[in-house]
Image (cartoon, rainbow, N blue to C red):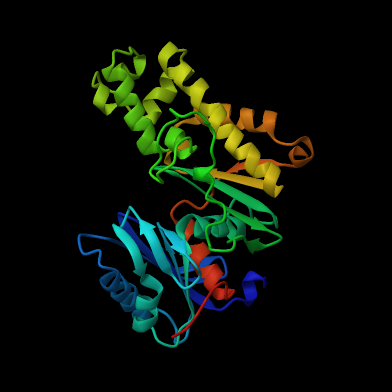
Amino acid sequence: MGGAHRLPVAVGVDLGGTHLRAAVVQGDRIRLRHREPVGNDRDPRSIAARIAAFVSRHAPPGAPVGVGVAAMLRGFDGFVAHSPHLGWRDEPFGAALRRQLPGRPIGVYNDVNAVTFGEYAAGAGRGSRDVVAVFVGTGVGGGAVLSGRLLTGFSNTCAELGHLKVVLTDDARLCNCGLRGCVEAYCGGSYLLARFREELAAGARSAAVDLAGGDPEAVTAAHVDAAARAGDPWAAGLWREIAPLLGVAIANTCTAFNPEVVVLGGGVIDRAPTLTQWAIDACMRWVNPPARVGLRIERAALGDDAGVIGSARLAAEGVHCAAA
């Protein structure tokens, strides 16, 4: 991987379910930012045309383009197997981009992989060659950079950490992937909200409801975290169940990949410091002892810029890029 100062100008795009973010990037510096709502027209060809309009207007001729997509990809040519956020299934999104931007190198990446590479290159993992990221937001995602290279695996589904199994019983919670027992089904934000409503509707009593203004339907992870920190029995009990599951998933990831830095981010991490600390404690207890030596756990540093920086850096370095 080349140094940041030698990299060409590139465009990075972060395409989620709500916003399309784009930036012109050189190395780890953003020269121009843009954000717009994804809106109702989510046809892949329309999205590709909008990205192409930004690139044509703001990027130098021939500048590479990297697009991080909130999706599970299949292969390395930008084929989207499934994106619940965008409502896509089996869409040749990369081909649509290449038709709109002929002659430019184009890479399509899983959004969390792009964010991971951004944090590795310019954020909390900067200066390390071995970085793993775990993001706990609506779901749970992850990525891994080892020896300076993004791990993608045989079919581009490496480091899908949200689907590590942490409960191995027949009645384990069902994940959106169709299997039971995934860490996402216990720790992902949408699953947590469903769990709060389920248990509070069944009669659980908690100070978290008071913190939410007396409305059980308004309880969030932040309310539960504050209640757990204050010793609320229901909230603390729920966190004592969930934190070890997240912790063992992180520990197993560290045991497998042996990173120097683990980057933690996402809405649940940001809003639930007690849950996060208990999960970190569990991770450090269960990670393989040799992998614990020198291990640092850091909070994500780049915020919304991580995805565009990571996508641009990957494209600038020619990672899984193709031109029409």
